[in-house]
Length: 370
Image (cartoon, rainbow, N blue to C red; front, side, top):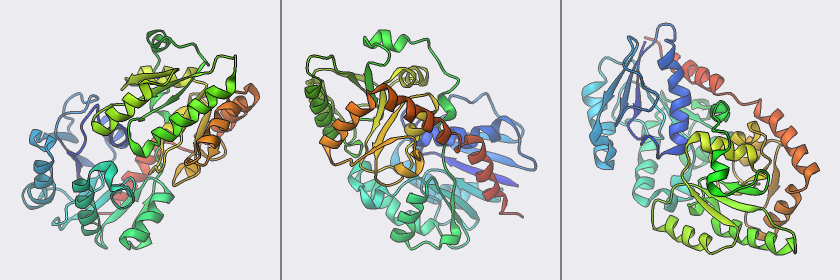
């Protein structure tokens, strides 16, 4: 069987969540040939882990796909009508398949932002997804979602037959082997165990203003004691991000770390008093598992997929309540509470595996036999 993989949407080093997904699902197929499988990997540039074409795995680089208009052209016209004649099926790990393609497709949809929070991803992209996700999910194609929460959203919003849907969870083990010896703490002026952190922070969906309000309330309750600092990690990429960053920079104790390489992020987790992940909505929530594996307590929301991912290894809050988040910050600062959550988190983390997710995804593809 020969499979095409549409990774044209990934901008390596920028698309954090979807880049992590593609890397951990596809890279094992690249490194070790699955029996009877060949792959063509369509991308706008080679991924960082690429070491050259393999006999069973070759890349086709379409640099123009970095621009949205060209990517849509390639996805919806060029690939299905011109270049996929030799392939048996298409794996589309980035939300949208090719509506005109007559071959079978497996499409991963990571969340329902296009319907529930269109402003988060841009209205044009939302419109594209709302039109082409249903079109590319014809009855003979299969849909992968990364959580049961997202599956339920898509059943309701797209009227998809539940038999088409395969829930294959993501994981959080990709940071475990990385360590830079705590250099990030020195660079940011941090002391181990004396800071909280947030990741991917500079987006409205991450609930920044409520979290910052909660942090100020937490600091006010500390009195003469020195409160933990708050480290904000993430790319500040647009006007919304810049507004959030400007607001946050005026709050004492807040540190803007920017986007960090994985080794730095790994060390930040290992030494943090807690990950604060009180998002308004998540299709999955990989940072929860990253934290749990690396022994970092977690405060997270009660909404969407987060309870499904965190299990009983997190302190849950009402994401709309600054006072409840502030109380959680004080509570998780207590040694006994933190240690209990770390233990539960490690047990929960073990339920998730990138290796298993990659194998299950390939199993779905292999159902399309010649």
